[in-house]
Length: 346
Ligand SMILES: [Fe+2]
Image 1 (cartoon, rainbow, N blue to C red):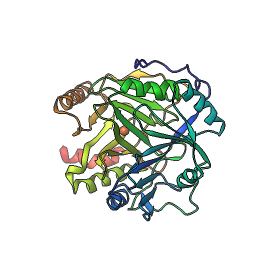
Image 2 (image 1 turned 90 degrees about the vertical axis):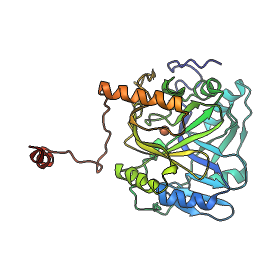
Image 3 (image 1 turned 180 degrees about the horizontal axis):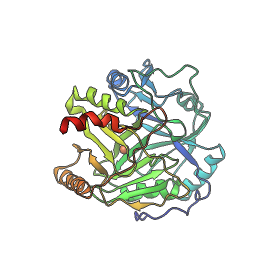
């Protein structure tokens, strides 16, 4: 398999993509109580069930978005597909590369609150589930702390970022076998590729590291202040901040990353761009992953220095990106706001 990113347009899903969005994530952790507290009081999720060795968390009208279990089994990723007919197409594509697929058991369907699904593993060993018709909860979402809610809907839960030493193989699996579409990629300060399924710039990213795992899950909040207030809450335990506030150069997300009770991060984001899939052209990111900020404490010192130099260069060039706002989320500033400050300076 080659890892050379190329424009999409080939493969079994070129004309009719099978996958819609990231629907849910399952996490294995013995720290269920910590997860419940973290997800509600820090992220603003809703804990709906914490009995029987499971913490079930909502972030919108879906029955569940994050499921934490202490059974010691590896976590999983639930990807929504357009229709049941996609199962056969996905199975054929996986069969062609020798990956085994099976149908969900009735117990698994009930546990995931989906009508149907198939299960397989990616080359890194991650359990992948493709599902249809996830259940909604008839009761309204109630955030765990005062919060504006999360941007989900057809964009899905957010995005997942995987780490692997088998970068080329994992990228090829999701892009060439499953039909995830390349958004962009970078070689510095680390190798990474970003893949989309819908208008969200990326629902999946793959980072080359020496370990297999989840790097982070991104959750996009409806208001910039939700992110800032989450940052303040995280500052109560500064060591829980894995990446400082900053803004990404590709999806334009304003975000910071907080450590979870597990060994990965959650990116608390706001203001991600929406892309036009019909016209999007994959490209290499040469300006670095962030316009400013995002000091990455998880990187080794040499790579952090490279990342910092790239940000300084972005600042020297005056790199800017549009701010993506939605109704109810902004007001246009006027000179009247700035006037007192001008007067004070004169
Ligand atoms: Fe991210």
